[in-house]
Length: 501
Ligand code: UN1
Image 1 (cartoon, protein in one colour):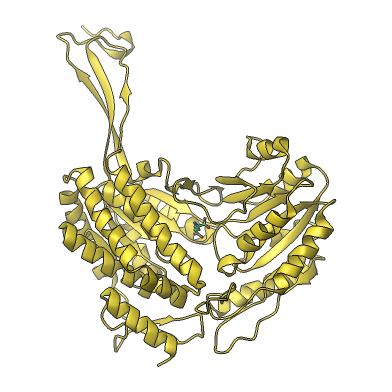
Image 2 (tube, helix red, strand yellow):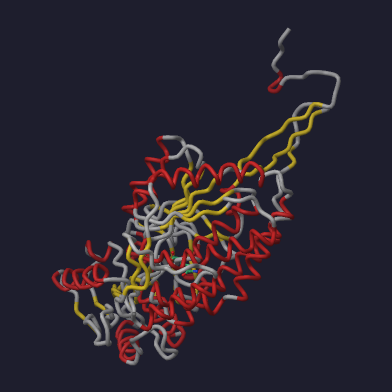
């Protein structure tokens, strides 16, 4: 057994998950660190998935009557357990998703943060009071629990994105059935062990939170089951295009967080020290495998040469290697398919006239992982490959002359998740944030497009899918709204002045 497999086994044991090796398991869990096998599990059958949804629905029927602030206590217990097990769960994220230590811990911190937000929210699920046009009448809105929320999550944020959904759903009075990526199923099971313990401490109904192990066939059960009123899915635009019409066909709701093709506009006045740091973190962090990763720098011609040479110098010093080494900044790609996509995108960019500034090769790291040198390609135009999302550390440089041109390039892509501008000019900054500026769900000034805090609504427009998760009023997606009109008069006036008898 490899070192990482032993380490993963020990962590799972401490989190309360039994041996991850099931004799006849069909689903092989691997670490991208060295490609080694770290678990072998049996996938759930579609019947088992349907059974879990049924149990979750029964749990929901009890949970919805528990007062919301009391429901918050369950999330409080979960937050406490996450604090206690932060190092272990973070290390498991590193082992299974390949994130560097600090980002693995950051992922768990993001879970803790959303738990804190949800606990406060459990006392603030406010509805409106509305002025009625009729005398002696009162109108109001109430927000009621929705039902079973299906969560489909991706490998790159194997637990945080589940927690954005689940922490809110639980305080909103919902049950959650989770289909994690097959690539990060052990992390999901580690997380679920903590959820079950929190549930025991808080006395929640059995089956309120379930994990489905398997490939898309179990996910499809979740997508098609009418007992699941909301499917919240994170992944590629391709996946979203398959899920959305199926859920819509049964008139269910989706909350989609799909592809991004995030850019940074770098204006003539930009503080280049800060810009270089912001660009490198966003483009290279998580080995370019965030949906918010920076993929396009749109730089003014007057600062282009300096920016590109400073970026190349910074890229040359990036420590690439095992994400468990504290000094590493660039860990592995998730698997061979990701490496191939990186390689093919580079070849296409160069065929389109792109000039490789730095990187682009496989880095020699012991073991069977797919490590690459992050690449920068200077592009003569925004060609088709630049408009596609390649989930790897591949940064395209595009050059502009005036801000209108930069904005046109910026918004020309089909995705609309995150965006940023580096400028010290208030007119440029405000234009970028205005209606004629960035068309994305997230638009930042003087920070890169990745690394959002949980307090804001997270999600994007166009092919990103339009969903909003996490902070602000994203909680409303997990509830149903009832409009109530109460007549406390002795008359029966009709709305719109209608006379009837
Ligand atoms: C994702 O990649 O799916 O804003 C989520 C960020 C993180 C979340 C990314 N807080 O980069």
